[in-house]
Length: 241
Image (cartoon, rainbow, N blue to C red; front, top):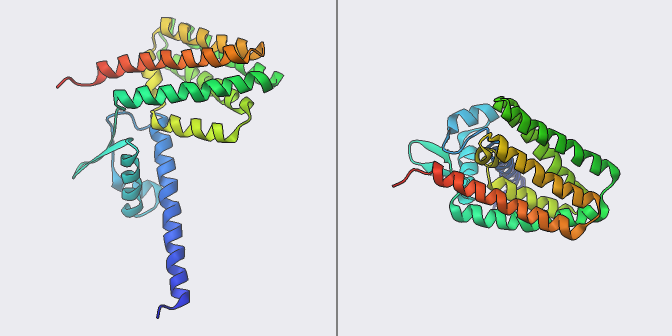
């Protein structure tokens, strides 16, 4: 007969290990989404184990979970490589993203505060400045500003929507697509950045005007345009066989 104390200790170890793997999945997914691990780059188990202060076992389990999500590809004797999303992945993700973020914009238009509006306008200034920096040839500065503007804009809309489940769903969807994919599709092109800035500010204006239906429609159009740019970028980046 198994000692109850021993059995309890085993369950505790399993629970701790499960939490460790889950936290590793979240951490790695965040780093991939943020572009720290770029598409096509290799993720080494040994290095991660040393970095996180764990054995290779939870790292291996976390990478297998990411492979099941389609985020990485595990290659025998090589490690895990960050995958470029397939065209179908992109189409489906951006379609759902448009619906979810469109609904967030709809809700934001009905519930936003003046502080929310001010943040959207601040994001708009950074979007415009990013385009200006790109025109001046300062692509690194443009990239930093665009990331900052994009994060502020979309987080403000989602927060103003006031729906925790909606926020969680959008966050999970964003983790499926590397965050730097949209920037890579824009390519630091000042014209594309200016168009991107204009799209965001049309959404902001609709929210400020409390025009919920327009805010929804403009957000869906914005997502569809982003999808087109990303698909073109992926097609150009994928080696022909």
